[in-house]
Length: 479
Ligand code: NAD
Picture: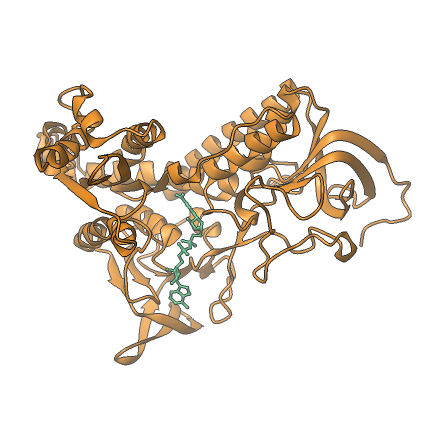
């Protein structure tokens, strides 16, 4: 219980940011740069109970995923592909705790970078759990000594991020049934790994543990696979991942789990009736929910929707004057770190009255699998559904010299442009370095480029970026 009798400290700032994930850190740093006295309240603690910046994204999310995936790809290459280069490598083994430690060291150095940024910009970090009392006042329960203090602010920015959704039939125990965070800390290779949910997180975790040698089964309730990117990308992803050995079971709704002496039994329903799967460990990757429970006192009247997302307008303003919300907790847009970071800067500049609007139509999405998947703009299916006249250019990376030299020829680039203006409306990529390649597409779309503009842009040869050039060329040639 918080020690309410302790003398309540009282502090005042121009801007108080609640949450030190990517969105909160970006907002706090920009606020301080703009000359505001700034504080950031965050309750994340490291293994020693000390404040740890970066939120779930850094401490238990995409950065950690990426670090592990790079190790896993290297291991796989050494085990399976290195001989093709004429290099003999025998008895390759993997030390999983060491691999996890490398990931932890990367996370630690990025946490330190964020802490240094806070110091450099004189941002006051308050290690505690914040509760919004009204549009000017926050109550903070200290993580360290449970004392309660009050912080006043002219402007408040809520950025408390998201948490993994729990599945009642598969309660996580951090041992046999893991959530997406603890799945990044497995200390020994599970021989059979089951994953509930073949969404972004399920696929990223599957890529890591598959490349390290686990036999992966993904149970996905929906009948269709990966609905967000263009369907040609989803089909290609399904083909590539299946060929890599992922057992992708669609239309498979998990209804029960039972721990056994050997691991876990998972029961799921398909069109053919009830099915059973045995595994050593189970990961639950069935979505994330906004971290807004207890964020505001009822009398603050902060407006949330029925799923707990904070209601905001297009300028990230909540229903309370001077209170903003950014990142995963809002009803606006997908849960992406770079979207939250952009909103953080946007809100700080709004407070300073110097902002430019954000264009969410140019928001890139990336799935860090092997190969990567990335897209920006609209899909062919969405555009056809509204009757937009479009042209399509598709190019398979197996036809590029660079992909062949890399020995990674799986993948494609698809560009969709408007039939009349030729303006690029969407770009979808699966393949090596897709996360990097998409940046060119985002920039092109930001400048309202046409596919002809991409064709007339000289691309270095041989590079993977040729894929974009050739896909655009297909459109131009079809005129
Ligand atoms: P998701 O919504 O992408 O996927 C969850 C999947 O679980 C869904 O396909 C759903 O049908 C399935 N599911 C739910 N209940 C089930 C059941 N009982 N049995 C079988 N399947 C079931 O959610 P996620 O992958 O957890 O990701 C959460 C959010 O975090 C997303 O918005 C994602 O974009 C974001 N995220 C992004 C990145 C990135 O940008 N690389 C990384 C991690 C997370």
